[in-house]
Length: 400
Image (cartoon, rainbow, N blue to C red; front, side, top):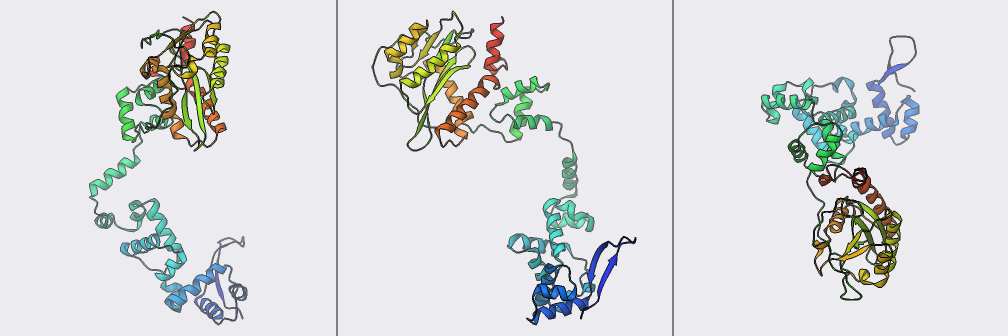
């Protein structure tokens, strides 16, 4: 037989139920029916017209843990203290139990457990305040009244630097000076000290430096060396007047290395040509030169400066430079400062890109290099170029 079930309808005649409440007697009969081991949960639900199988499971757990009196709805409406609620919430947080299991343990409704936990997690004191006096909450948490209102006011205050902070986060590879130039271009009028202070408050620090082994191409005299025409006087102002080149090594896997050979324009800092390979051989240098010769302006006769690596002492390299009217220059032995422009580029490349990406294949290495050089030439601004990108600097000075 079916036991009576109390149902509350909506105020109109739409026939839609707002909620369904089951009588105390029905709950007892349903639980006893299941505990008799004669019926499954589904069969008991069909027999007593119970819409939710989970509801029946909850009744069974409650009855087994706290007796049949726990099923009486007249005894479940209590006013719980703050200490009790926090006890329930902390128990739920510290133990890997479901809300139903916690509710059964404390003789509660599972929705109460979930509601308390959600308010505690999302709103904290503010979530508890509507039901408890503020003085009691402040005493329990040990917070002075003035501190509470100060923090409440601060949380509601609009941050006037909100847009600037969002912009700073989008330029995570920039220091405060370059970010200041970018902000000036966007129409912001803050001084450099304000930008530096905001970055400090946001916890932004330089974490791009690392100490790793370097690739050395010097193997002694394996050809002919050239004189040093620059003597660390890096004062070129016109593009394609002085060029610098070198090779750097990047570890891809235990047995695979990636090598990059770029050509850096001294005046603008632009990467005017580059090539990549898995071996630092003459094919890498030749590919780089072929790319460079396609971009050299007609009638230009630049200086090409490099270190004394074995590739740059070979007759093939020196012959190609001579054919295109390029004067070869070399650093002194073991003095990387003589080739500072290209060394500075390698430093930026590794700090801003390669040290922050896990490269697992040579194809990925090529793609990362292509993307970075495009960004470096066309998007990345330089403080010593008055906030211009390398390609902007070339275009600006070519129009003078």
